Image (cartoon, rainbow, N blue to C red; front, side, top):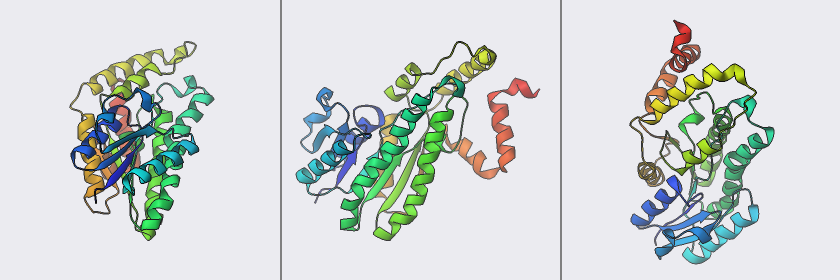
Length: 277
C-alpha cells in the first residue's frame, strides 16, 4: 500500500517542493494550503489531493485530514511546514504582529499536530515532522520574534517526541538555513519599520550590509530541503533534528562546542566587529 503524507503550506517554497518530491518517490500527497483554488501545478498529479487547510482554523484542519483519509485510506506522515518570518526591530513590531507570528508558527502547528494524533495513535504508527529553522537554535538580530516562535517550536517538539514514543509515533525537526523562496520575499515585504526609532539608524545599516552578504552565500534550495525532509521521514531512525543548509551547520557547531558566554561573544563580534576593536 502506498504511503501518504499531509503537508501544510504547500502552495509555494519548501511546501510545494516537498509535495512534488514525495509524489516523485511514489507517495500519495495531501497538499494543503489556504487558497487551493489558485493552485495550477500540483492538481495535475492523480496521487495528489490539493485541499484547503488554514492552521489557525481548526475546522479546516479536521476537514483536510478526513478528506485525505477518505481518498487514500490512511495518513502515514505529517509535515508541519506552514509559517512565516516576522522581521524588524523588536520595538518596531506591534503586539498584534507578535501574536500573529505565534498564532501561525506555534499555535497553528500545534493545532495540526493535535488533530492528526488520534489517527496516528489508532494505528500505533506515524511521523510528525515540523519544519523549524536554524533560527530556532541560533539567533540573529532583527528576527527576535521569529526566533522566539521557532525556539518555542523546538522546545515543544523535543518534549512531544518523548511523549509520542510511547505510542509508536516518531517526531522529527528539520532546520533549514536561508532558502531563496517566496517565504523570504514575504519576510522582506513585512519588515517592521518605525521611523521614530532613529537611535538604531547606524545599527540598521550595519545589519543590512551583513545580511546582504549572508544571503549571497552557498545556501540550500527548497528542493534540497525537501530531500532532507524525505530522508527524515523514511530513514527509520529515532533522530530528532536534521540540519538543512551549509550556512547553519558551522554556527551550530560553534554553539554546541563552546561554553555559552563564549558563544555569545563570538556572535556579537560576528554581527558588529567594529564595536570590539
